[in-house]
Amino acid sequence: MNVQHRAYMHTLAQLFVVFLKLGPSTFGGGYAMITAIERETVDKKHWLQPGEVGDMVSVAGSAPGGVAVNSAAFVGYRLAGVPGAVTAVIGIILPTFVIVFALSIFGAIFKDVPKVEAALKGVHAAVVALIIVAAYKVGKTSIFDASTLVIAGLSVLVLLFTTLNTIYLILGGPVLGMAVIAAKRALGMAALTEKEAQDNRLEINVPEYYI
Image 1 (cartoon, rainbow, N blue to C red):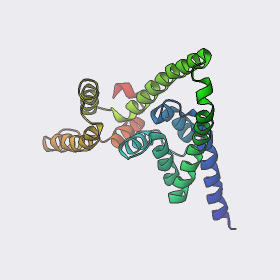
Image 2 (image 1 turned 135 degrees about the vertical axis):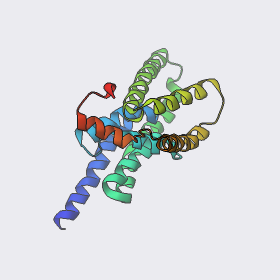
Image 3 (image 1 turned 90 degrees about the horizontal axis):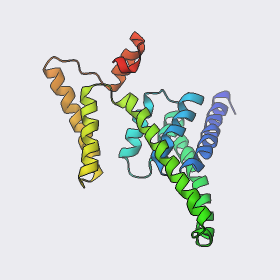
């Protein structure tokens, strides 16, 4: 086994361990995991750049399936191709499968116990906080000018006050984004993409809220 192959296998092993550890934190759904995934893949392992978390959420949320599983596939594929994606997905779903299997066996026994119900209420409240933090962190990299702020605001209003299927927002977002960029460039206005905005922040070395 040569050095390159050993390094590749080590990467696969790390992917499995990291997402195996993240798997039990999926209470509340995949979006509640974004903060934990970012902490592991950006802050600790440096597998992704901070701006790529927004890409991960966009891809994971747009594709069919759970956001957490899709995020694992995204990270795994970035690091080690298809085997990496498969390894990361197995790692993240294995703990959940075991936990759900166990709870399904004992659920009927404990479902009416007041202390268990109270504990679940506490978990629900914590999940809300996790989702808010995830939205804030993704927003820092995804909302970088007036156009993206307006698109985000309109999307929130549509979700809150209409019954429009979210698939139309997912499909409409890229179309609207490209239309805005094309219109700005046609008018001779600056039309930064997400990557360009981040590069400019790094280049001039000022806080994001001044941009």
